[in-house]
Length: 318
Image 1: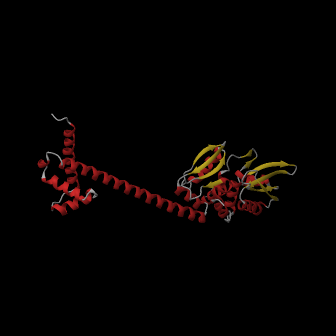
Image 2 (image 1 turned 120 degrees about the horizontal axis):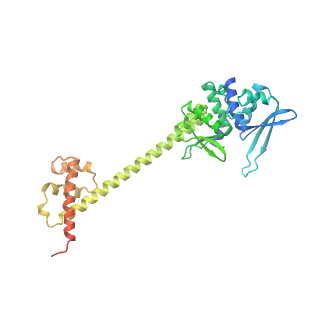
């Protein structure tokens, strides 16, 4: 079972007040139902891929409207053979659509009327229904965080984005195969969405995985930084030792100052020491206290003299 299915199974067990139930049902019917007409009048055909969501829709319609309904299950014609759970709402279809803000005398609305999400509680219920109808979230084990809800048309997508913004969840939209898809990629905001729809168990799993991944990633990043710093220190020490060897083997060795000779001896004795360590070792060996910048300046002087010696060696003898 997928992470999204776990969320839907959890959330579909929620109990709601009348106005919240209406808001949730509005989002569910918007994306999961089609209208049909027969000699009996208007009816609704609702199809979902989650049994718990189908039970929720059946219960909400039965409790609020007392409609006559038929249930059916069929398999999708694909390799996975997923089941489709269907509900035929045979009576009060028009009244239901009008009540959930999706129908007027002019026909179906592109988005529900604003009274459906009048309160923050209504908006949470609406987002719950929207996710149950056409939402998904990548498993927290995956490295890329992604929440999306298929909105169908752009107007409804903007309406979803507006509801998410009420809870400081910034969402964006894209067009995919002729449909508007609303999505969120920031991990903390996906967590806020799960909190918003009261998917508490899923939120705990999501946050546990996210914290563990972030800790692991930070540990790896810091370790990489340490390795890079160690390599940098080692490279600098090797270059310094190479300069010292060139300088000590030059014909001008007698002209090198005592301070540079002392530093050269300390560096050769402690070839792996970082500059900060070398300041303490230098004081320990010579009794002279020198700062890091002081040692760095002396190493630069050694480098200058060594480069001069290298250039001299390259010149042809007269």
